[in-house]
Length: 416
Ligand code: UD1
Image (cartoon, rainbow, N blue to C red; front, side, top):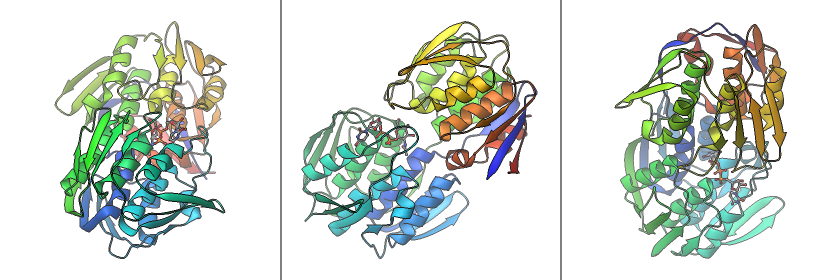
């Protein structure tokens, strides 16, 4: 297993190219199951979750070829079964269920297991698909579904689930008649998925708002599409500039999708300016803690909660962080405390009292964004920090240590 070794050494300076978005690329890759013809995607990040998805598509009968950030996929010989071994490693793979039902009228997909950041059920996905005419049974941990042609439905989501919204948009594209999704999630990655599907001939409108309408069509056709840049990767590097009191320019940064994060970082005292798709972030003096509540988009993203907590941990004053999406997403807190942070947990809130300096130590990454939080804290800490179990990081950040080393960080990877 690999670990990262970081020696905090002051300000980072330079340019970082932001990669394609993992959370947009995953549903778009799975949506290619719906398409009759070859899809050519560009700006697909090279990450473990993407490799897993391409492997899954191969097992489902899609022909996939990859050349760096370009992926070509043709769903020519579809099979209805997604094996447990792949689905259990990545929750998003459950999104193949709806597209398989839409194309084949049957599907067998393992129920995704529990995951480190909470129970994360898929009941809202299944309920929506049932409203569209699918029938499900649970057989030995597999969801087995079948249907005649899916039919459009009026669906009200109890919670604006990101994966659930994506799943139902995909299924509705090939359904008979109109589907209306109310209380839909509004995340930019959902807009990217809808724009990809529209480029293939789907008729989706209202994406980006909480009411999405999909007019079913009989088939989707080939297209080429560029995946949007990763707002969470970009947000993480904005914080790298702040936590090292450096100055970073982020290229191809999806600035509009980062409004809530940039607003909070400015409130903390960072300078952030944007020009077209380039964002320049810097900090020259001490930063101040603020209060943060994670919420569905356009609120502050839960996927940035751990990273901003690292920044607050070594800022002035105190702030309250409230996690409003997942019930168990504070596992980074104990590890930050091992680095000298002063954080008290009470239910879904964390009280962060800033300290003057964090001190290097060995810490353990528990999930993807917690890993990024610990790397950021390591950049600011005095002495050496070893971040163990970084396989989580490889699921979601493309070449993180290479990008950070190129702007002056002392960071390298070692095998344990
Ligand atoms: C996606 C993102 C993840 C991000 C999350 C919230 C991807 C691949 N992952 O995850 O990085 O942290 O959005 O922004 O895009 N829920 C239910 N029933 C359901 C579905 C969800 O109760 O059927 C609950 C979950 O348990 C969780 C909350 O809703 O508490 C949010 O989940 P959801 O929005 O679905 O997140 P994901 O799509 O899994």
